[in-house]
Amino acid sequence: MNRQPLSVIIFIMLRKEKFAPDEYYHVYNRALFNIPVFKERKNCDKLSQAFLLANSTKSSQAFEYLRNNSKPTTVVSLIDKALEIARSGEKLVDVLCYAIMPDHYHILLKEKIENGITNFVHKCNISVAKYINIKTERRGPLFESLFKSKHVAKNDYLLHLSLYIHLNPLDFLIGKQWREHKIKNWDQIRNKLINYPYSSLKNFLDTDCENKIISGTKIITEQFNNAKEYESFLREWSEGTLNIINDFTID
Image 1: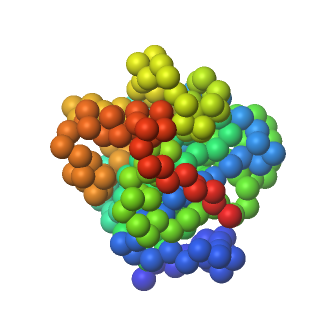
Image 2: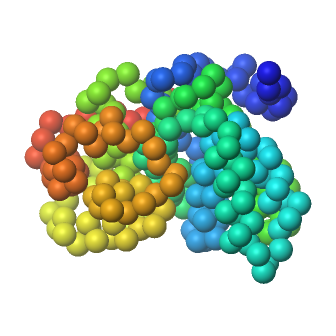
Image 3: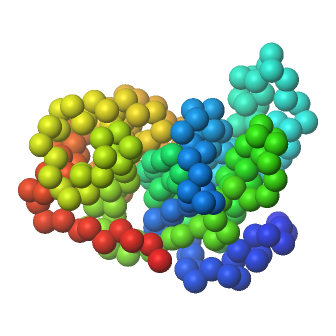
């Protein structure tokens, strides 16, 4: 039986939202004081790497391997080995889609094992905080104490939530007018979105594009005949030409 770290036990006790295996949740996590830590590409890369390494019952061993063996000349092979260690364990969650923003991230998760979401998010946050703290010579937590979450109980909400997450980078790419569903120049916006590297959208629109972070996406993608149909759904949502589910606030 795996013993939980004290910090994880405290997280579990304090959470309003109680996670359950095989259920879906929208998870949102913001940096303290809205610090735009993810404006820097290396920090985004580190969080993306954490999404991979933390999603395993062997994540502690994977992170420890990196800590004990890091050398600039062998970074690529070290990460591959760490990923191999992580993949030898059991997955904690399915990551259906995500978007990394300058000061926060959105991620749609399915819990696969008990306490999977709490452990996954906690390990991601700790890994990124340690990296940034060392780099910037700061101390203390990087993210708000408790990440926010909302249970996704209905299929319509699940589909619309995936659109909302994938459109989130428009906040800083063009501004927040997209939230009013009044987008008129979809082709220009599409290029901005699909070229943004810290979101899973490209994998929904280009089925040949590989993203090792995401899994379990068939519950969304199989409800569309093809990627173009998903894009049409995305476009219609952004233009306000279909019935919109718009309550994505997380308390």
